[in-house]
Image 1 (tube, one colour):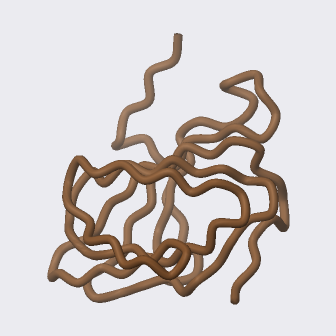
Image 2 (image 1 turned 180 degrees about the vertical axis):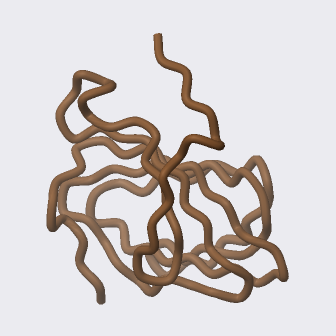
Length: 117
């Protein structure tokens, strides 16, 4: 068992967002598996990108905005769940004055498996 307190998380900037990675493949004892928390500041976005092998399960913890997945716009609200499979093109935009917070569970993640369109 492992307990992680939010106050103990290490946050770092990446592209247009901040993220913390509370659980890595070592914690899961499963290569390529990780859990991260992603915070998009108000009115920010990350452009369309895709992964060759990585599968991502997103849970909208708080905030609002939209995702574009394979050219389909999807409004986001707390409690929504999205699954992006390998080669799904996806982008996220925060449309509000508060952070858009996504919980992101990754499977088959590899270094350099990120491609911007």
